[in-house]
Image 1 (tube, rainbow, N blue to C red):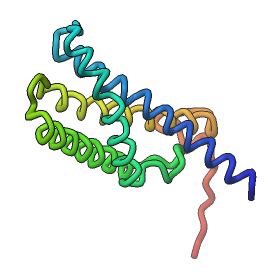
Image 2: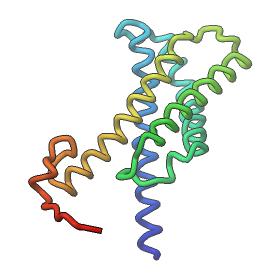
Image 3: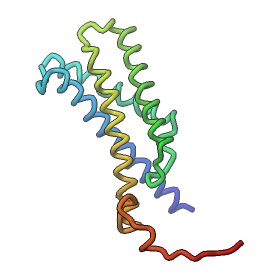
Image 4: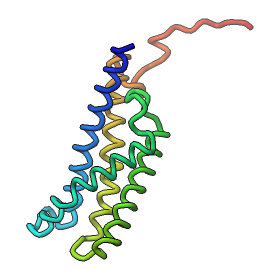
Length: 159
């Protein structure tokens, strides 16, 4: 029982750590894409100032949508839908907070749209990659390459 709780906490912290890294990459790359592969110093200062609050908001929203409950090997289309909902919700909340506090003075608006899209692709792709890797380890091949008729022999049964 204790080992299961310890393993669950380890997986939870590993998933949180991976998500924080991917959220940071997503937010940073959205600035880089917005400014054509450059990162002006003024916007770098804004990035540094807003990174921690944005990470906190995203983690809380993703937790609210239940994305830290399940195990990686059971990632499904429902989880992808929750990732999309959580990403749109967190980006909307961030936009509303920046609009209320700063009226978007000095904040590029397109960064938050790019961040939302990159978050969906990075988090969804990472979780799908983990699922496919675990499936490959278990079955020895990816499901789309497997030939079911060779690996398992079928018996005809009359009911």
